[in-house]
Length: 150
Image 1 (cartoon, one colour):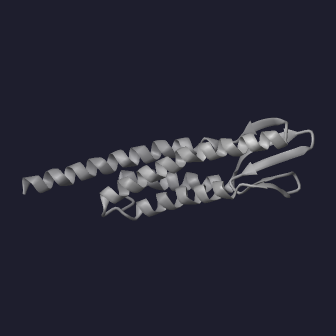
Image 2: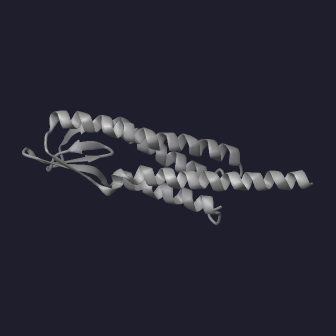
C-alpha cells in the first residue's frame, strides 16, 4: 500500500493538510494589536476569538479525510480517482472561502497582512493529488491491458 508512489503522494498531501490545522494562515499587524487567522478562528494577541471560521474548518477537515480515505482505497482505483478529484475541488474551494474570510477581516481590521507558509499548502496539495491521480491512472491502464492479454 505505502510502497506505491501514489500512496506516498497521498501521504504527503495528508501531512500538509494536517499542518494547515496546526499553523496559522496569516497574521495582521494592526494598530489594535496582532491578529492571527487560523483554520479555526481569527484570534487576537491574547487568544480571544474575534471571528469564527467554522466552514473553513469543515473544509480543511474534509480535505484531510479525503486524502486519508484515498490512501486505504488502493484496491478500488476508480473510486480512488473520484475521491481525489473531489479533494482537488475542495482544495480549490479552500482559496475561495479563504479570500471570502480575508475580505471580511479586512473590513473589520485594517493593518499589514503577512501570509504564512500554510497559505500555499493547498496549492502543493493540488499538485501532489494530481500526481497521485496520474499514477493511479497508469496503474489502472496497466491492469486493463493485462486483462486484455488473458
